Amino acid sequence: MPVNKRIAALTAAAALVLAGCSDEAASEDPTGNSASTAPAADLTGNAVTLESGAVRAKAAKDAADGSDMTSIFGTLHNNTDKDITVVGFTTSLGEADYQIHEVVDGMMRQKDGGFDIPAGGTHELAPGGDHFMVMGYAPAIEAGDTIDVTLLLEGGATATVSDVAVRTMLSGDESYGDLGEHADHAEHADHAEHKH
Image (cartoon, rainbow, N blue to C red; front, side):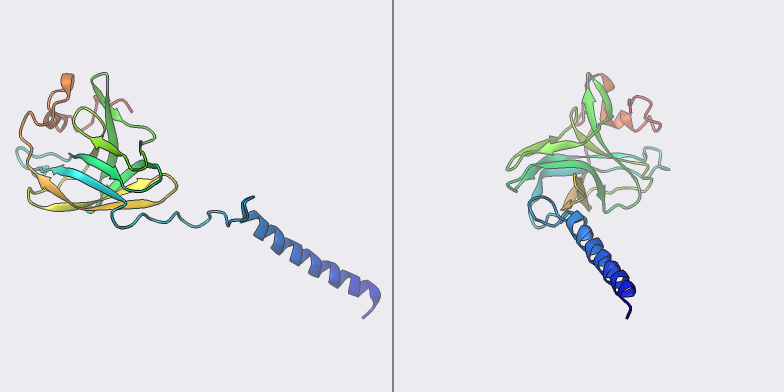
């Protein structure tokens, strides 16, 4: 093989090797660990639990007292040694609009950025404070049933809390100050009172 062709072949081979190295280097952080290109690992077991968890039972939207929304309350426990940031959630109910809400100055609104549960600590989901809302869900959710709640965590991981009880909550159980009972919240299907 002529010298020029040999040099060209060696140059091409070296370029391929360097390209491979640069791809490898891009996938490593300065500590030498592989960068997180894969989804974050989901938390398993009892990493997060929900004490006194309850989903508010509701009639189907087409019933006289029906609604297309409900709420989820309880105290979330972070049983890990790392802080957790909850940025959203879904449930085993299926397709719906899932939102984290808060109450600020007597006004309910969607909570931007979610909330933190400190390592070994708790975060309360309660009437008048942070809580989960399931909206745009027409079927009935019957008292006595259970649902699974999957927390969406910052970084892409999830943590599932299984078998959260569906309970009937009487009028007055969900006071929102100037907003009245959370049951009244269902009468405003367009959520005009929410500032998003």
